[in-house]
Length: 251
Image 1 (cartoon, rainbow, N blue to C red):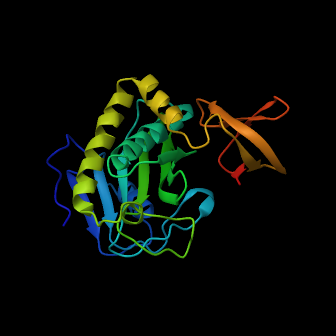
Image 2: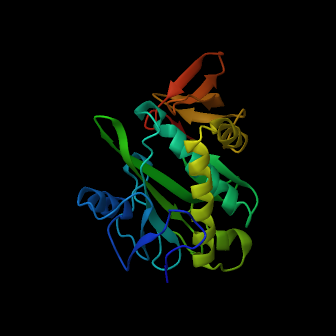
Image 3: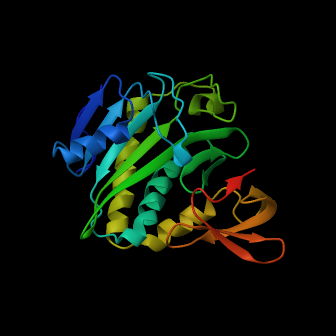
């Protein structure tokens, strides 16, 4: 099913397709370490048994219904402190492509795709291999709910549930990889301003009062994201707080 992509310059020229695996990110890291993968390699599976999300969560995905894959990138042009720029580029690409199929999608910090009212559609987990000279490789794991109709987690949804129709996964995959490559190359050129603006304009709860929890529940407003990826939330007393991935929860 998954052939070498003809619509890209380097992404997807090497596709490792597995009927089943524990985690495409883990497989990709293993392939990098054994020198069986280079920049552009994609590991994709029909059934992921231990898909990983943020905070160590397990990603629920019905076999054969969705897209679960990992991209091998080598963003040596980024400094370790710029890791979140890659999250932004990939998140923007995914959001922009999926928004061509359904409306009402948002990017939930740091890198989930959610519908404004109907739950989580997809997620990304980027893991970096950092050496003495900086970032050597990044593995961008992406899980997108495409044709799955029923979820144990009631806060999850899919393109099919949002639109009422079934989709050609291969067509979405090809278009998505091309779009990720386009924005990755924009990032490489240093054109981050446009990506940042898109990310903020489509950020879930941006400049809206909502409920959160750090050490206690509070009402706050997302004001933006720092260069290092920390979320900026202003509390009702006017004080701004800066949160890493595991330091604040959306309620």
